[in-house]
Image 1: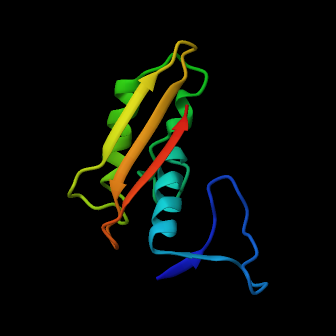
Image 2: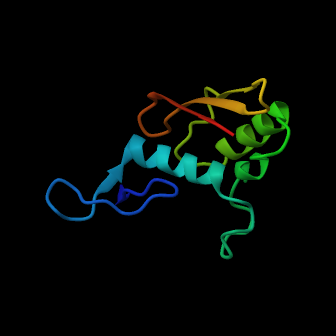
Length: 120
């Protein structure tokens, strides 16, 4: 199944034929995972429980264990993420208070291992 290609915080883009770019399978799952992790719970009025709200940790003292727990819970709610093997989440606190998050999961459609990493 295809959908519009839309990275969190970005805008629609043009595809190779001049139409709106589409994403499917692994890319679509990755976009949805990132959107779920960065969306605040309650921001989608039609789905109040959606979102991990990791942005709430920006500018606050690092809490890697809490961030890892929230991430793990939300990853298992995403349809594009396989429950087995379980996602591997590593959250490390840097000296400056930044939390570096690394997520590795199996794509539910292809079983390919995917990785995301970013700092909070």
